[in-house]
Amino acid sequence: MDRPTSSEVRQELDRVKHGRTYRKTLKSTIYILVTVAAFAVLVATLWMPVLEVYGGSMEPTLQEGELVAAVKSGDFKTGDVVAFYYNVSDVNYPSMTNPSVAGQYRHGGILHDWT
Image (cartoon, rainbow, N blue to C red; front, side, top):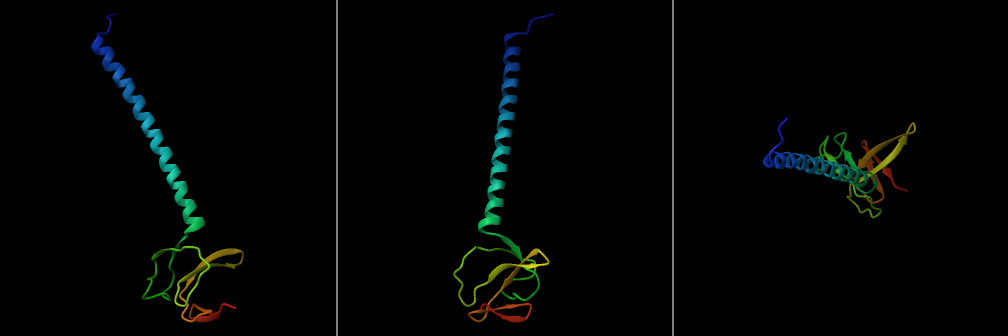
């Protein structure tokens, strides 16, 4: 059995070093992607939920099927688009309305009072 030359040893060491660097880079990239995804889920659920528009009651401002990022706030003015959850048979359904009169909102063609 012949001994490897010094250039062969260097090539093998470079190959092993490259493999370690590649695995380390891949692992850190995966960790970063998981962290960013977890942060995005937290932002989307706690601070800025993303909702889909159902029906045509919001036209022409919003079209059916559009995605809307809602910012949680308690400061409402006339004409603001409002998103809220209501319970139907113990299931939460999101709903959006575009109030046309202060203290009232329109949902499904019916005008409701806020009081």
